[in-house]
Length: 234
Image (tube, rainbow, N blue to C red; front, side, top):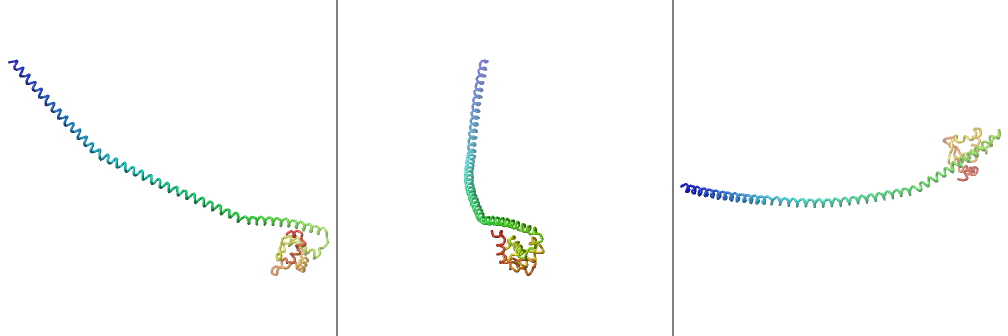
């Protein structure tokens, strides 16, 4: 009886273990199947999600490439335009510089005759000044010689020539005039006698509107050039 009971218990235990193992194996297989299915499902979903991302990435890459090309084109156009503007600016500057140099050269050429004329005028004035200084020296010498004579009175002719010499020292041309204060070298007592003689010789005339203004005639100018050595160089 006991042996049968043990055998029965063992048999039942073996069946229970076998059933448990079978169920455990089935559960494991079922779980494995579910896990695998879930993994496959996740893989499919991931693949499905990657496709639009890939398309978007490709699209953005294309857009970026187009933008880069457009920027390159615009940069090239801008560089070309800048180069043209710079070249035109340099050309304009060169033309303006050449024009300014040419204009300055023309002005220099135009100024040369004026400079020559000015130099000639200065030389003429210097010659006149030198001649006048020499004439003044002669006049002072004549005055000193006359003063050394003492009481000797100059003749009307001598005084008239002295007056005519003053016209020559001042480089007065024919029809030119001097005022009374220009004849301070002539003594007051002799001036009127000498002036009357010069008028009588048709060397000098008195201005009708100003009796202290004396005009040199053409005859007086010709005689004055002969009697004043300094004026012969003119």
